[in-house]
Image (cartoon, rainbow, N blue to C red; front, side, top):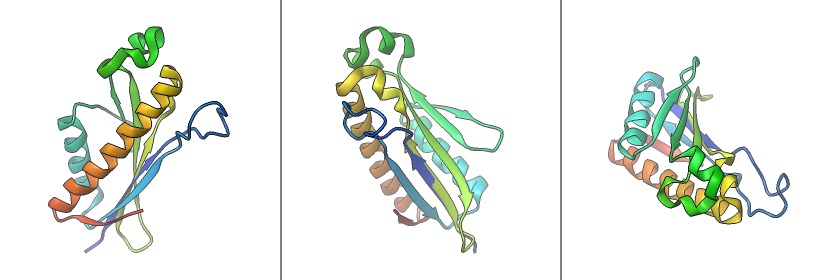
Length: 144
């Protein structure tokens, strides 16, 4: 039975913004289920976790939460309303597995150093929760 990969990615590095902490973050998940099932599972996980799912024409997701306007105006002080965006990309791996690439977007930079750090912490919490949830569903082959 083919397996599929999910990758989570972040778009910015400390080299791009030298005064900010490292915000580039990416995780790759290998799954043993077909890509449409992987999309449904991952979409359900993030929707249940309070993220807005914005699919693109290729079937990948941008996930968002918080208030962009509030984040622009008051940055990290927006608290739980701080705007964050992350990306989930789906692909077929070399052995037929579904690959999911999950990445952290640069939206946390609106909150300055504190926002970038908060964004990174939320990303780390999310990828670990996603891995645990996929494992509990019996579909996770591995995380890198």
